Length: 229
Image (spheres, rainbow, N blue to C red):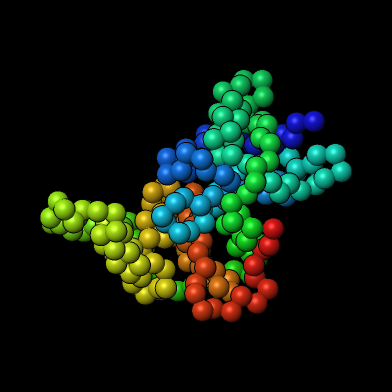
């Protein structure tokens, strides 16, 4: 029997489709892990090179149930899920209802997710506008430094070195690397007015109303804050 999820409306489907399309832009073979509990769906992905987990939530029209199962946890193809979400948004009769694709072998990152609870607010994060400007300046610096390189030096190793130097810097007042803010911008999350920084054990999380990016800090004790497969 096909497993189906019922989003609250076609608009929710469109927002989820936009997120999946951005993931696929960076990785044509991207996979996502889905977790549905109650009336909420969480979609986890990992865009290459950013070294963060991206999290997009969606509201369900009714609590998830499939037979005796009251929760869903499955890793699927992002491309196949995007097709299903697109179909859900276009259908007049079943607007917002999508079929869950068949499970795929999950990539290593899908085995360990950020914790569901235990998050605390962290102070020191600059306002949303300042973070956007920081990302814009970092992108401009990367392009300028690449243009300054002699043609024979514009090789992958050199570009990676420049990128690591720029993106590993921290957002002022925080432990968040600029690459995490860049990921949030690239995925369409840095919009609106509210931007929060949260922490739970070794995890840091940048959160807006459009989605979150999370990353693990090195050298921080894990305790019981990791969600295993």
